[in-house]
Image 1: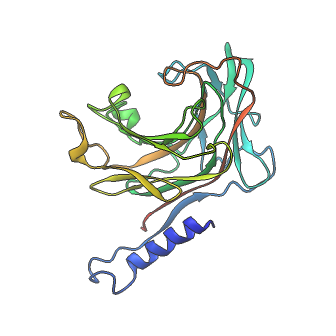
Image 2: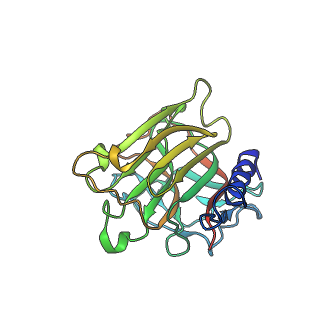
Length: 269
């Protein structure tokens, strides 16, 4: 467990300990769900925890075909999940990559969602760690809600974005903020990305630093706060699309997002 995760676990335990609140108000918090991505190199992610989205476009004009092949999504044998974008033809698309999700396997309303990730780099590379409302098949998007814990344009290696998409605040009108590191880039090492979500706010963190907090009052006029029901987790690396543009002659392939872990903390059942 990383020092940050240990600290969070300790704080959650203290919050639930006797003496921190009236006995009737005490709520047990702890680690609800996790994947540490331990296993041999080339192994697909645990099917009890992750499903694959297979296809292309996803409403964003992306250029990759997302597959369920180990060449695109597999463990690296060193405790990480590797999602790799490749320049190759598959199903009529010029690139391949991967997109996995916990839909139908795990969803959670509120709590702390955290991942430790090393990002890829390059024009047109678009990795993300994000959440979608579990009712998406019933109500569609954006009515289901979307919480982008971390989005990143590979051509801007020192910048990540945290965003909310929902009724009245989606696409170009999303509630969003950038976080910029002073030097280096997110492709040079692992960083912790997280949101802490309760009934009245959602806060975004990079390496323990809170860079954005959104409440219902912060939404644009006419918007609806739909962040009150379970959401599932997604990890992916897109190639191209309206937000990042296409790769160019400077983009080097393959490009890999490494995920050390994903952990979810919250109220224990």
